[in-house]
Length: 347
Image 1 (tube, rainbow, N blue to C red):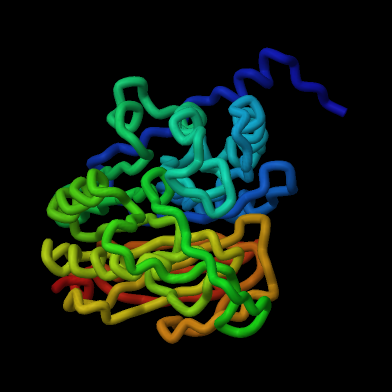
Image 2: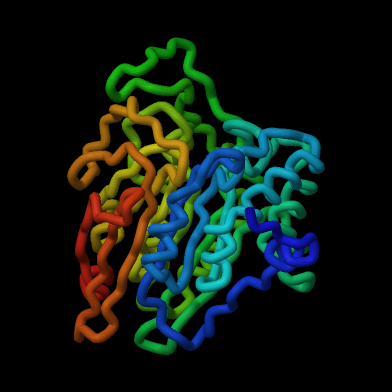
């Protein structure tokens, strides 16, 4: 057996993340969610083989589920010690948002008492600079633009946890019945929120930033509305507010990414924004659930229920650049594929 010295191990765990040149166009973007830190993670092999320019963590990046920040930190470090993650970190820019389990509590929102402390642990793990606005604001939302004019990709990371109102609970739950899974009920209160007013105002400004493609990462599903687990549809007025904001700002190029569901699908919807909205749900990296059988009239094709990750490729050489949305399996094989173009994502 080959032993690694303590100094070598420290060097391995503290390798600096790659910084992607902001004036270089993104051509391959990988993403995923739901990775249990203490289980095997072979999925990093095919992800690294895909050689993405960027990887986006969509949430449940660990299963923290604690109010003890020492426990949280140890779980983050378990993810950080994964050789496959270290390889990814060395070759691709890494961006991340969180979901409930890495936030700190299952199905949690603003009622979680350690959200300030958990935000610090999250930002420390992903090596957010000390002077970053994310260090000073309430919540981990963020946005960045990559690529030169004509090839700009804006990545918007939403925080669907820090400010979110408590869920309404269903009084009668039918388990494992098609379209009826889960215990959440719609909340139609005008005071209920997912993002909070400060983040909503920030999002409006971000949707006005010039870009050819806008990747909006939201940990929970926004378009699918058939199940009763967590989703934007639990707050119907907030879901409609998102669609109306995209329409009002005439934001072109919006592609939604989500995770959370322990199964994957691609959805497409005419949401009244004057072009089709697509959402790629990529879940799970190593915690799939084969029993999910949920109604989704917006689904393109069928669900995929084994380990997987998502990929977006952009062919900037085309006159109207082709954008390919994919779900790939544990072997890196394409299981779902939907094509569109930059020109088709304009109001």
